[in-house]
Length: 305
Image (cartoon, rainbow, N blue to C red):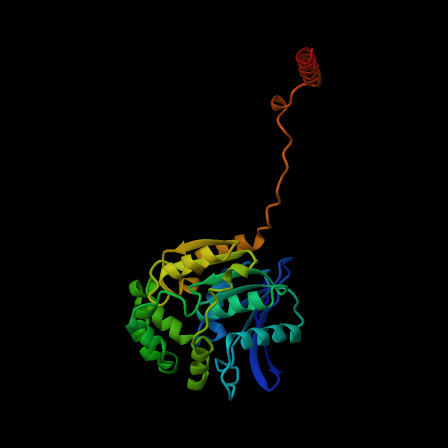
C-alpha cells in the first residue's frame, strides 16, 4: 500500500521551507517536483495520485508560497536551485529525477544545468526558456502578473477558463475544485517569484543540458503557447516532445493520461548501440580471396615482363 505524504518544516539559513515526501520502494530515483508560480504543493496531488504508488515523491513550497516563509530579499533562479540542492542534502537525498511545471519548469532547467550530477532525468511541463519566448496574450499575462487569483479564490474561478484554457473552458466545476486546494501565500512572495524570472533565460545554455528530457505541452495553453515547448525540445539535445490535448494545467486535468507518459519515460534506459555481425553474404570466402590475390599477382607479373 502506498504511504501518505509526510510533511516537514525545515530551516535552511533562516529560510523556513514546508516540504512533503511520499515514501516509496521503487528502484527509480525519487521525483522532485517544482510547482508553478504561487502554487502550493497540494495542487499537484491529483497528478501524484496517478503515478506509480511505489515511486518516492518530493515536493515543497518555494519561499513565499503556501507554508514556506517569505524572504526579506528577492531571489533569482540560481539561488533557488541552490536552495533546492541544500534541501535535498538536508532530507538525505542524492540523485533525483525532476519535473517542473510552468514557472517551476524554469527552475527545473536551472537545477538540471547547475547540478547535473543530482538530476538524472528532466521533465518540463507547460514551460518556456524564459525571456526568449513567444508570449501569451497580453490580457492573460496581465492577470498572471497579479497574485489576486490566489488571494481571492472567487476571482480565480472567474478567470480560470481564460488563463488556463483547455478543460477549464469545458468544465466550470474544475475552477472551483482547483481554487479549493489553494493555500494562499503572501503578496510579496508572489512578486519575489516574478522577480526571479525577470530577464532570465536559458536559451543560451539549453544545448548543454545532457539529461534525457521529456517536454510536455498543452495545445490550448493561453499562458505558454505551444511553440515555446517546441523550442525547448529543439534546443535540448536528448529530448522528446509530447503534445497533450488540453490547456496550461494538463498535469492536473489530464493526470490519468500524463502520469503513464511520465512513468514510461522514467522507466526507460538509454538504448545502447548494438554492433551487428557483418552478413555472411557480404564476406568473400577465404579461397576466393586467395584466388583474387593470386590473379592480381599474376597480372602484375605479366605487366612487368
